[in-house]
Length: 147
Image (cartoon, rainbow, N blue to C red; front, side):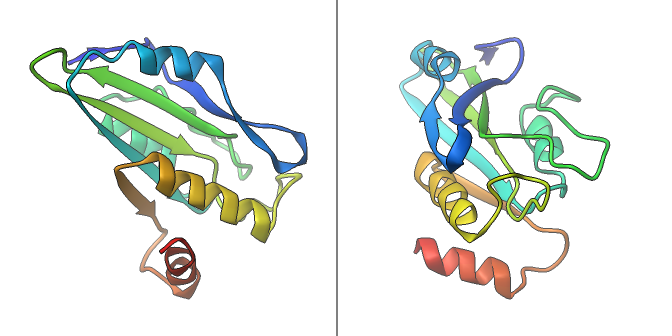
């Protein structure tokens, strides 16, 4: 497996007003994939619960996706890191999403959460819902919403 970029790149940019748009750096990285198949794993969940840390571990790295050391959420938008398996392998794309329910985010709220969670489901072939402990009613409601 070969890393397509030396570090994660922005795939979906979070714009003012809560809108999202594709970012050229992420699209360029996706165009480099030569493998016949691609597995896209997306890590989603509450803000400040270790999504970026988990995404780094999925890529076999100690660092890469930004890990914050404050109570504020670090990731904005959707970031990606990809490994290409070449002609005989499968590519792995790991997506790290902005956290849900971030009270410090200017666009925070139910609408933003719905957009983020829906985007995570639609972009991935495998979704990892990272929760602080057991899956609660809030997570069940989010899963019900997208199904």
